[in-house]
Image 1 (cartoon, rainbow, N blue to C red):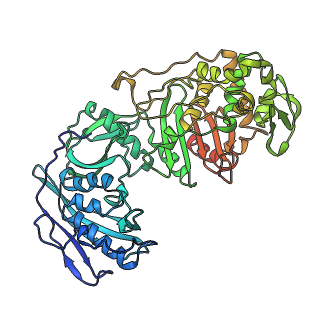
Image 2: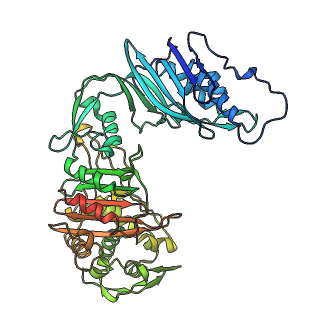
Image 3: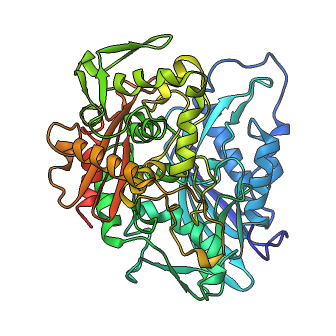
Length: 547
């Protein structure tokens, strides 16, 4: 919540310009001064049978005009009655003058397209002697009221402003936090204009740490949320305040590469981490939304989970080294039949080759001897060595990975990253970073010293286990490994793992890929990207090559 927010009726002038486009004339309505057209819906006759079917062209034009006029005149309750959800509409419509402090507005409808009516708003926002013009576009849709049969505006918060959603409101006041100048590890400034994916991240950092960066708040019009985890979204700055400088662990070069790489796909996310420190070097998403998929997503990670499964096999004595013998049949049964891709088979082979070729059956068949412990073993290993299941405090809002206990065929599915397992790019990048560094270092985006938050910890990988896992990932990244093509351009000491995960309703599987080179690890997921090396692999390689 923004500080200093005042609730009071603000005098001023509102107007609707309704002419030239479907309204057959030019009428100027002066709002809070009291003149203007009749916007009281109750004056219309309610006699006769209830109307049915889609609203007519005349109804659409008249309803849109009446609604926009009432809103522009500052008559929030009256405008709300012209919607199909007056209870939810009234606070936002009344708040336009009372909380957003809009003191003057001209609302001009455009050409209706069916039941949709676009419009533009040219307004003035005034607060404590500061004022500034504000303009934007939005649209409304006219529908038939289910109970009244009247033509009404279909209520959505986005009618008032396109970025408003349920649980949000417009407030003009002193900002909740001072503005910040976020810089990367080398002091390079990071802005949402240059690095679009960082927009939500920078908003959260300002909200959490702006008062620790040495700045002073200004006056802003912003979208605020009832969810304390959602930062304010500034729409208009009336007075700037003083900027403070906030040091982050991001790397401008890696961030630029990540931004460019994800733009090649309609839905993609990537995270890069420094294994020796756990410091987050890049976070990117396409598309960019307030929900940060790279940090907050929750999806099955596919065969990238075989890194943890291999660690579990080594920890439980089901394998003792990269050359441990394993079977790789085309299928294996565990209450249902599990297949390798295109039912390939390697027969009797080694753990290293099965990992490099991503043989599903090799990571299901050997686990059966665990018996009743099979449903808990993977989650125990994930928590013990990789910190998955612990509470992470990165400095921004993130979602922790989840490897829940399982039974039956769900257990078998979990060993190949399906079932109820949920991860995001941050979690999977951390798994690769743990293998490369030999110990889980909880990912962080800003120094712990800013707020003395408690970081999650895990048991270091035993030396032999760490070395074996690195050999497995190196085999996947070279030779006949499934990640070799994507990693071909990446130099240095490298390792990788591909993955794909089927998602209900999608034509293609999600593409997953994680890898490391020298002291940088990264993971990416591309929705409907097919196999791991097809889409997510090139994204990771692009980021690793920026090190």
